[in-house]
Amino acid sequence: QVQLVESGGGLVQAGGSLRLSCAASGRTFSDYIMGWFRQAPGKEREFVAAINWGGGSTYYADSVKGRFTISRDNARSTGYLQMNNLKPEDTAVYYCAVKRFIASYYRSGAYEYWGQGTQVTVSS
Image (tube, rainbow, N blue to C red; front, side, top):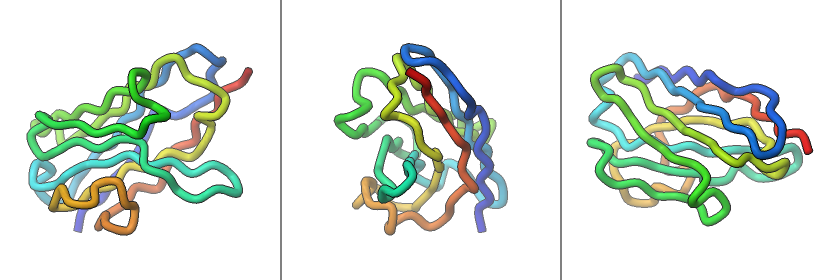
């Protein structure tokens, strides 16, 4: 079992920044791919970003590329999502999740463990 706890969400104006954190416990964090997903009201959960075990490879949805940066600190068993130039359409609950293998990193159904989510609200 892996337990994941997100933090760092909040209310920010358009153009602002937030940094989300995902603290992992239970098993060796570096054994897992980490992904960030988001879900807005009335919409399906969507892929935001993913990072491989050592952090050397990152993947992004087109909608956040160039604005969001995913990273991880395996020594601290923590992952991060730095979000810059936020837009109202980024408003959603953001979830971190982990899986063992890189295949299908963009599919929410492929992830084994999930956090409870943190709300991000961007006002215009």
